[in-house]
Image (cartoon, rainbow, N blue to C red; front, side, top):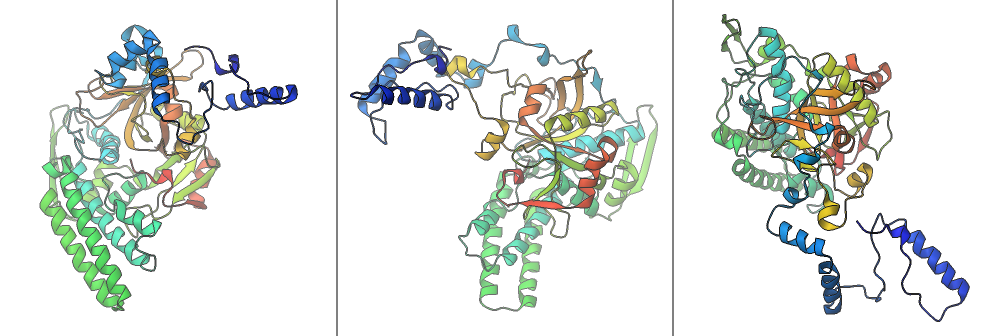
Length: 501
């Protein structure tokens, strides 16, 4: 909208100055202007560190409202959500916005069947269950409308293990000042609802899995803020006590006994809020009727159900990351980021985004749904379920658009993995075989998007997808070797790649 900055000339040149000085100042203007990414400079600079004054407010308001388009935008946006006003209309929908896909996985669970995380941050657990239940459905010829794994089962044991890991970290950092950056980081959110793929590996390896009917959702699993608020406060109290005991010279045995007693109380809190789940070796009967009408039943345990009935080895799956800040072709981890004290750390093989897409297409062609992590809040039309960087015209509404690159957004804290979903399809160009759009199964129920399915444009994949989970069948030997060799580069605990989906 309007002239580009490079086409504008300064309207006023300070005087008195020599001709050569004037020429250099113009050069400086154009040099600076080329770095401003469309920002239009004011005609004059008043030399104040705070440009907000009565005069400037009068000037800014006058210039803003002198354009009739801005008056219309102001009237529309003050009365409606910004996204609603700047989103493109159906008339402008492009080929990237069609819910049609020429590559889709054959077997996937229904978004309508116990697939709503509701008011909780369990997306990573739901995404995992959606990937893993597809294997159970395939193994036993089940209806996708009638089978789901228990997200609450994993949620329970994740809370319990994160609490223990937090207390271990408090003891490990007792020599740090209480107000140090590290201790403050530990205290900030010790039992977050969020997680990462390797945390799933830790959980299913130790606790296994159960069908949804064995341990269904409770109110506090679906609306976790009450439990989280109380438990976080209690853990901070326990952390304070442990630090004082160590500093007062209590024996390691005494401190260990106190911590064990604390964990017993933590268990009580979680069990009262979520219910008592089966233990990993508890026996239960799994019964179902398959799509052909045949009744089947198995006596099993959570660990046996995972190994014998899900038949998906999570430990052989690993994350490919696209982090343009850091060197590609290397393995990264994040300091103090896991959920089980003696479990595996977070692991990412960092690759270019084109490599992630190549692997994702191979997986879908082999009927493998894909766990992935992204920054879901950007350029999302929740009502239509469309994730598309071209779906919103902020320049039309505000006279400016967003100009940061993916790398820059991560560096300044404007983008990070905050949501996990499942890729279930892709539409490839018939001639070039390049991806145009991707089909997504979300965990927000079936009343948004296309009955719970979302559409992600390929441009959105470039900008806001950070992670996919795969295995050695779909990557080059070199990539697999990077993961297997465990030659980590450790990112600091506060790094953006330590965010939890």
